[in-house]
Length: 113
Image 1 (cartoon, rainbow, N blue to C red):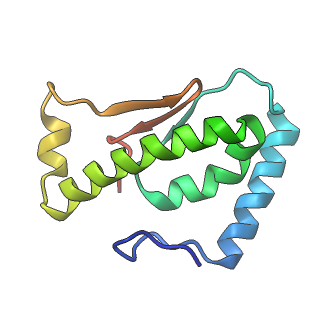
Image 2 (image 1 turned 60 degrees about the vertical axis):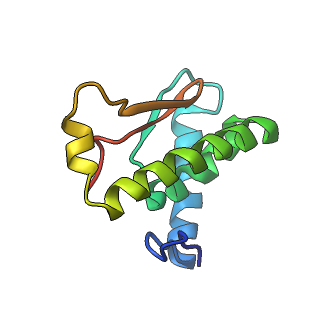
């Protein structure tokens, strides 16, 4: 099992297998060189689900860069959630809500539970 530092958003072995199967289906349906845009929720479970597909379309170096950006964005997101400020943050038009991680991959804070 994998978990956030806050022990939430855990993906279990069954979830990992489902994510691998989803990656295979995406690869079959659209390939790995398709011009697509993946927009993710800031929730870690969402990122864990798409990760197997991401590893097929980006190099290890690009994945490291994406992970570095994700860590910083997720830290900010978790702080907003823990301090019950996420809705206020999202509603403020001056705040950034859409974060590009790489060409074709982004996080959107508006895609939350």
